Structures are given as structure tokens and as C-alpha cells.
Length: 332
Image (cartoon, helix red, strand yellow):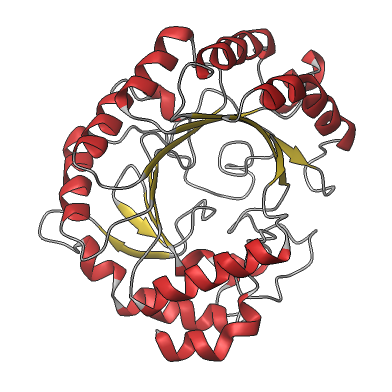
């Protein structure tokens, strides 16, 4: 299937909005992001965390989540009064750099912490043995980010000439996915909005190349996502945000160091709402705490002067919460 992320028909948008409002009403969150690795083996030009880190003054962290931290996360999730729909094993780094990623997924799956267990990778480390290991561990989807099929442009955008390896890994994954009915393989490409220099014809080439595989299998997809500037990127060459963002209303994000944010696009944890540490915050107290509620109120009020980190983030979600501001304000 070829699909446009966030470009849903009106009925599906309304269904998601109703679902989201219901979760807010019941004080539940939908998605948990866990960062196995903040390190990455590439330096993509459109990734402000790794490419522009020194230019914009970020502390460039290159770490792996310890198993003791992950076990603490698991225990905290088990103690929540609600269950996540999905756990995303990725954030700002390359998750396959973590040697025990499959073990993490297996533990979460065994304890039934969510319905879906998702990975997003640049594909460089997704060799056949690793692919099989991750699927067998319980991953329900793997998304491979691919932004060009031109070797020269790949090297320019990614910092390394690894396109042949990525294409080889994707080819195996496509072949193997056809034998796994409860698993999805997604090849993700990015529609340009003139922020980082991507080109629209590259999207068309990727879609065309993988269209047969996507048509032949119901669990292989090519997904087109919109290019956007990241929260905290301090880019002022994009229009400032004017509409509320849905992300703080349905997700929690845990960095490899245990910092908890309300936004998966928060590259420098400027939206920190707590920290998991011995004797410190619990995930339950964070999820229902005042710091998250204050953040949500500022987002609803569109007070992006007080939320400067969000001001030049151009991410758009599925729901336009502006139409539901009063209803949500009464719920939180």
C-alpha cells in the first residue's frame, strides 16, 4: 500500500479525533517512545539532533540506554493505571546500535505492555540476521527511512555512502515480510517543503521502485511523510506555529538517560516533564502531573512565546485541536 501519513480522509480524521478525546477524558496516553540509543551512525542533514548539534548549541549525547534503566521503565509502565496502544523503540538515534534491542522488545511483548511494538531505522544495520531476530522478538513493524535512491545525494544527505547496503537489507526484508502475516514493513520517504533540501522527484522515484512490492503484500507499505522542522531546532526560516499540537495529549517520551518529555520531536528535551531516577519521579506521577498539564494548557492557548521551543516546529498531526480547545480544557 502507498499511503500518505497524516493525509487521511475526513472520516478517518474524525475517528482519530474522537478516539483521542476519549483517551484524554479517561486520563490515558496512547503512545510511549523509548530511546534505546541516542547515538547514530549517520549524520543526516535533515536531523537537527545529529547534523546541526554544534551549530545550534545542543549537547550532543551519544549513549545507549542501560538495561537497568529499561527494566525500571518496564516496571513503571506496568504500574500505570492504563495500557499503551503502542511502544516505539526509537527516538533521536539509531535503535539498532543497541546490542540488546531484541531483548528489550521481547521483554515488553512478554509482559503485554502494549498492542504494537515499533522500530524506525535508517536500515544500515538491518541485515538478514538482525531482521529475523527483531521480528521473532515481537516487533510488529519496522520502518526504514529512505530519502533518496541516488548514491551521490545519499552520501551528501547521510554523510556516508551506504545506499547499496540499505537497498540490500530492504530487499531481504521485503522477501521475509511476506511470510509474517502479523508484521508490517514500511519504507518511509519524505515529501519536501523546502526546509532541508530534499527533492520531490526523489519521493516519486522511491514510490515507483517499491510500488509492486507494496501492491503484492498487504503488510508492506510505502509511507510518505511531510518534512518539518523539529521542536527546539531554533530555525526561524519557517513560519511560526499558530495551531495547537496534538502530541502532548497522547504520548510520553523517555530518553536513554531517563528524561521524560511530552513530544517525540523534542530534540533537546526542552519539554521535560520529569525524570526517572531512583527515589525520583514515577512515570505515573509524571503522566498525571502538573508539568504536563501546564504544558497542555499553554499549547491549547497557543502561547508559543512561553513555549519558544515549539514556536518554529512545523510538525502537523492528524487532529486540529483548535476546534476542540474548550472541550479539552475542561477535560485536563
